[in-house]
Image 1 (tube, rainbow, N blue to C red):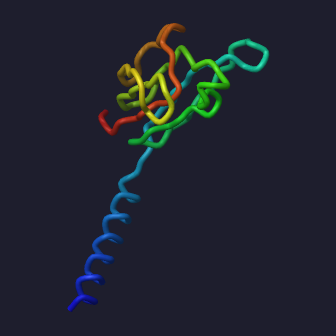
Image 2: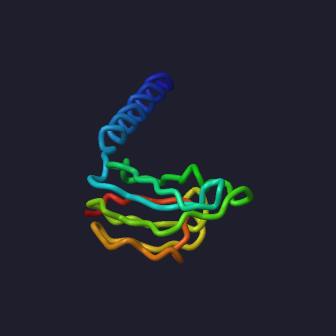
Amino acid sequence: MRLRHTAAAAVGALVLIVTQAASASAATGDFSYQYAGPDGRPQSVTLHDPASPGCIVLPEVADPGASEPAFAPHNDTDTWVMVFTEPDCTGDSWTLRPHGRPATDRLKLRSVFLTDRH
């Protein structure tokens, strides 16, 4: 009896994992931002068709002790995006609409959460 319950739970977990993996998709379009390079000059990064939904930690500015945050995000994807002041989608946040205008240099970010809302 116990073996049957264990097997049923394992199969249920496998179905859940496969369903979640199959439901992963990508936002269509580009999400871009700028950050200060090693020489202090602005560098630009563009994420083409980023995975969504999910949190993306911006690698160039992931360590608050070693870098200034990124700035001037531009959401030109087809989904709503939340930008966060800290890594791992924590800290203060702002929401950017799909295909919106570039945000000002004053908007700082270290991570981004792409929603599944279009």
